[in-house]
Amino acid sequence: MLVRDLHHVSINVTDVERSTEFYVDVLGLARLARPDFGFAGAWLGIEGGGRQVHLIQATVPQDLGQHFAFEVDDIDAAVEALRAAGTTVRGPSPVGDTAARQAFLHDPDGNRLELNQPA
Image (cartoon, rainbow, N blue to C red; front, side, top):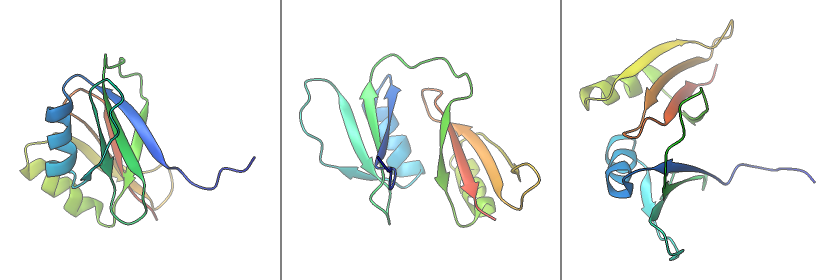
């Protein structure tokens, strides 16, 4: 088996509507149609590639460093926009000894997110 791409990540949130507003209004993802699975959730799309973030209303696990990353073209502008929207962001900083840069933030439920600007 060969994995050819990442389709989606799924994360737990305690309030689907609040989290959807964050991912749509603050981060710029788009609402997608979602089948009725019998439990609350939302599907969100990332422009330009078909990747998705799926939100599931459930208990959020403790932050032990697990996260996923959004690639950005201009990390300084992204961090500035997030801070202007009232979001706390740590960084940006280099990724080890590379020219890539990263910044970390949390969604409304404490899920850790990374912004990543490749070298």
